[in-house]
Image (cartoon, rainbow, N blue to C red; front, top):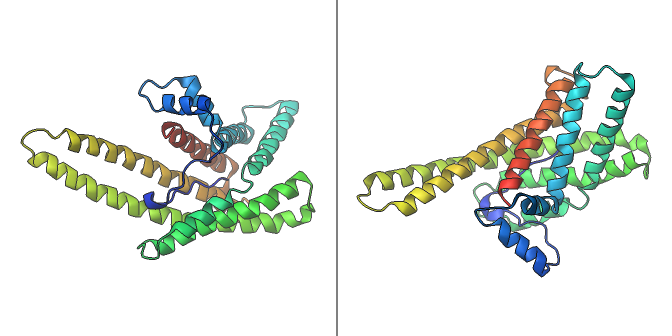
Length: 264
């Protein structure tokens, strides 16, 4: 499974950096216009490792859904699909190399006066540990280190991810409460306005869009948390059934893809 943590607005990290050239700057400026060109936005989206990772995630869990159903009966095709699913899973882990650094920076940026300090530490600490351990899981699956270490590495990885989701969900629920409070104040201001409430109407629209995205993030966290729990339980229990876990993974991937796409 893959993590989907979001820090509070004051702690959000920017997109991955790199040397800019004039061509890239032009593409970025194009993407901010109302009439976005699809291929231009797709290029920008796929230039980020999160964009490629989420497309791989969609491919993997869509394949898992097919394998967990009775859609395919041909043994040779089933074998190829299993090989594809396994290969994509290993490829996704390669995209997480060094990703734990963003969590270290997120923890460093947390203010000690932040009322959500504990939740932020749990969220970023859990995710950071998850990404760090996943590097060794990738090395094990790639054959560089002894595969006998994989069971306990994967168990620790799943636990750190699962614990991190408690902090992540808690942070987002707190942010939703703040958005709701602000939304009510803006609605009151609009209802009392006699003339010209264009600025308030625009702010209300942005707040509602933001609330929708935040709710989707909470749903995504629950879906990813379900997958982490299935890993912890080694597939035991009703909620760990392959088809349920596969649908949770696909839901998480689609939500994440949507969030990343509209943010470009």
